[in-house]
Amino acid sequence: MFVPFVVLVATSLWISRNAAARGHNFLNVLGAITAFVPIGLVAYLLLFASNNPRRHPPTRTERGALTVLLAGAASYLVGATTLPPDPYTQGIWLIGAFFGLLPVSYLVVYRRGYQLVTRPVTRRVNTLLGRE
Image (cartoon, rainbow, N blue to C red; front, side, top):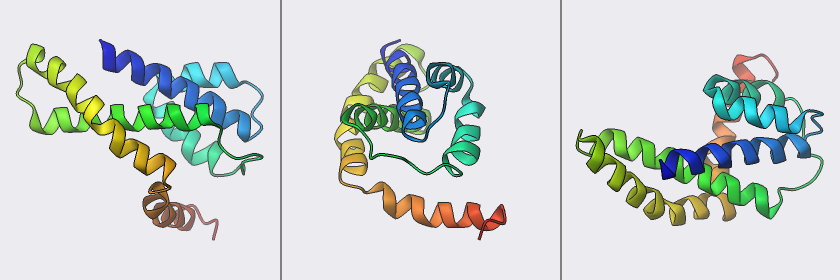
């Protein structure tokens, strides 16, 4: 239960801080809703975040939450594809995968490795939505 709880808190915190930087009025409500409703996170990223530019750069709290969020999501992906199907064993290895992927997530968030991935995706989404 450690990794899901940490990822849930990190998701809520990151969405709240990101929405604050973009001028949203209901930060805590938005953070809670998107943490518990996965489609809400996708809708937030596609509809609100892409249409509202940031008013100030990311804070250390926001970057830390994004680092934990990415490490948790990556550990779930690794766990689903490589770990044995036994739930107890998966739970133990999921924690190991989470802590093992934290340095990789740090490099992506703090060293701006995400820009290599997000620029082409953002361009493609904007083209599909007719914004370019």
